[in-house]
Length: 179
Image (cartoon, rainbow, N blue to C red; front, top):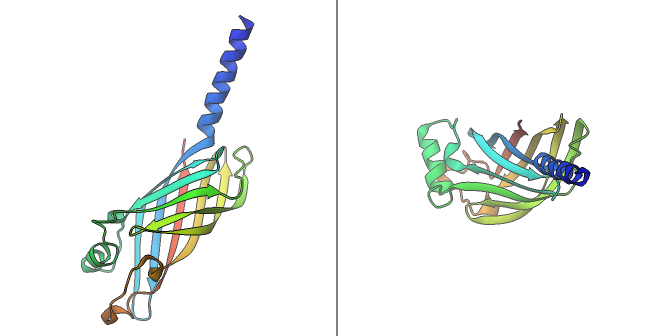
């Protein structure tokens, strides 16, 4: 009987540990195009992700149609149809490995680097990104900021609007796990 209890306890601990080592995250992602003649800002609060602390793996995605806040409806239409080709490439993803540990059992703020594949418009580039991670009671919040070069993803700016759209886009995100 004692062995049955010990085996049961080990199984329960394994289940709980496994649950705590994989965290689902939700958040928002913003971008800013700061060109000489115009600033364009948009945001989506539909960023989703998962981090497996045990395996040091992660995956994040956001659907492009969820971005709001453009300067006009026409600007949003051009973003989706002309630049991002949202019908053909509906999602941006970033998947890969954590390069630094996130100690879920120790509250605090940590600098964490990730190395992964960033995919926009069907083009995948390997990136190493830095993130600020805050651990509170086994839950995490991630804040990150980085730049994307449009030419890396074959996004071309027509001459007529080249002073209204920046070639380098500033991206910031915030995501957190929940109980």
